Image (cartoon, rainbow, N blue to C red):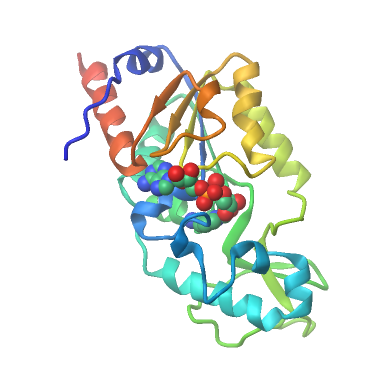
Length: 251
Ligand code: NAD
C-alpha cells in the first residue's frame, strides 16, 4: 500500500536548514532483515540479548557469547543497506552540515556509503583484545575460531561493542551531545528511545532549539517531544521525504 504523508510543514523547515543531525537505532536496519533486539526475532536459542551482551556473560562463558555474535555476524554479512540507509548517504552530501549518530553495530551505514558515522555502541566487525585493548577489523563469517584469540598476546578477543552495564566512550559521547546541540533539525529513526544515553541526545537537541523528527512504526517515549512524528518504516518514509526535498530544490 502506498504511504501518504503530510510532509509539507517538515519540507518547509528543511528548506531553510543547513545543520541536520540523524540518530539511528536498529529499526533502520530492520527492513534489511537484521532483527531488532525488542522484536521476537531478536532471540537466539532461548537467550535474550540482555543475558548475552554483558561483561558478566562474557567472563562466565566467552564461547557462548561468541557463538551468539558469530550467528549475528553471519546474518548481517548477507544483508544489504535499504533505501533508508541510502537516503542518509545523499543527505550527507547535500546538507552543508550533516552528522550521523548511530546505536547500530551492523556497519550498514558504511556499506551504504555514509562516510562520517559516530558509532555510539561500537561495531560488530571490530574485535578488541581484553588484555591490550587493541582493536582489529575482522570480517570472517563464520569466525575461524571461537572464541577468537589475540594473535599478538594470546588473550581473548571480545566484540568491540558496548554491552549492557558498560559505559560509552566519553569522547564519542561528548561529540554526540555536541553535534546534537548544534543541529537545527534532528531525525530520530528506528529507535525505541529507551537505551541511555542515546535516548537523551534528541532531548539535548530539543533543549538547544532543534526540531525533532521521529520516524518509527510505533510511538516511543520520545514521541511527545517530537515536532514531527511519522508512523511508518524508515525505508519508505525517508525516500518520501527525500523525494519531496528534491522536488522543492528543483523548483
Ligand atoms: P530497539 O530494538 O530497542 O528498537 C527498535 C525500534 O525500531 C522500535 O522502536 C521499532 O518500533 C522500530 N522499528 C522497527 N522497524 C522499523 C522500521 N522499518 N523503520 C523504523 N523503525 C522501525 O533498538 P534500539 O533502540 O536501537 O536499541 C537497542 C540496542 O540494541 C542498541 O543499543 C543497538 O546497539 C543494539 N542493536 C543493534 C542492532 C543493529 O546494529 N542492527 C540490532 C539489534 C540491536
